[in-house]
Image 1 (cartoon, rainbow, N blue to C red):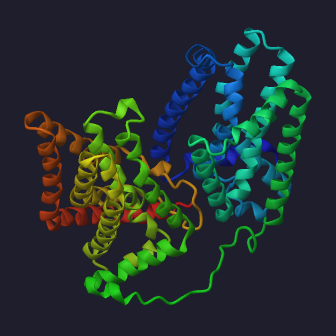
Image 2 (image 1 turned 45 degrees about the vertical axis):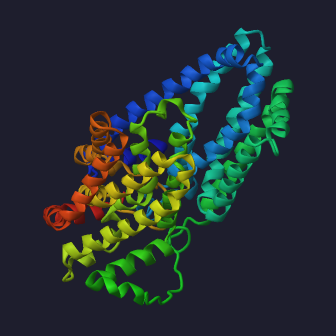
Image 3 (image 1 turned 180 degrees about the horizontal axis):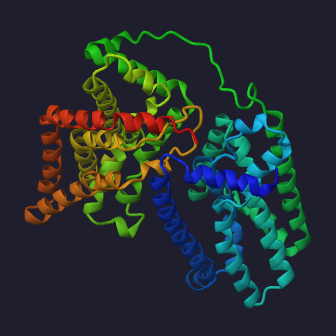
Length: 491
């Protein structure tokens, strides 16, 4: 089968998808986002040389070489969360007379032309041109540029293996945080050692062949890895784990919804994707440091405090809650064939979100160090999340018909089917409304009254919880068959 046939299959898969209209709208939206990012990288590539030279009064190449190690490692982390694995729908191809090598090469080459590789060129190509324009030898700059591009492609193939080894990834992430902290507090500066490596690529351009050869070797290793697992009973088979019995009798106090709560807690504990979501929820706790420490001047305004408070306490709410009922997509049709009340199902998710929000609010008490206003924003953000946003994410979940693969942490930040006009409109009361309420109180009386208005809105949401649940239940029922159809769409 020639290469064009693979492209033909991908093309038909896109246009024949049950969510074609949504996919098309998203592709346009993603294209606009990609263009904006490309323009940003291009602007940095064109301007960073002169900005470093004039503002820092240092050699631009020296500064870039110093921090390249963090650039490359952070690129790997971003790929881990956002870059799709080199997978195509190969099950039907296993019955056809197609060489495995062709299918695997096509899948891997899809990652080579990924936006995650191309976007770096928008920074490094103009930056390299500026270097030559400012008197740096062309051959030296070319060697340095090719070496960096080679490392980016190395990241591309390393991601294939790191993705399947969570322990390795979390080890890398922990090392990055430790190194950044040690560098920031001037305890140990890794850049003093790595800068000599990047300088060597410039001083000895022929060394670029090292990173290029390494990228080719990693490609071959990835190829052999997928070829070895190119079987239904090997790489394509789902991992089986020994079942363990957990009673969780302490949840029985919640009555009939305890069954759903137990199921959700087991889901979170046992699956890769849900564990990643839990980790992301924890990281949200530190989001407020951008706002309360004064490190970002643009976030110094009082309105941003409430925005930060919503995010600090709403990590689990946004990363888990917005994908209800998609977490149960694997067995959702079975659930719908049982005598299950929607209201009990929704209530169980709500209780789980509320418990996580309360825990986050307590853990975030360290923001008291930055003043009472900081923790007041966190506290009212938690109240608003419990009373209002917990309802809104469950409401929006009825329109997000994204089947979730619990064995993979890809798209942990979202999915293309999560984007539609209804969910977009629902972000207004989630993020904008509390800021508006605070602004009204702040300008009318003072900051204390602003915080009070946000808290009152949250308490009002709690007061009318049953009525809101009745509305959400009707929406879930009206979307039931569309949701079931969407969960059958596997590719």
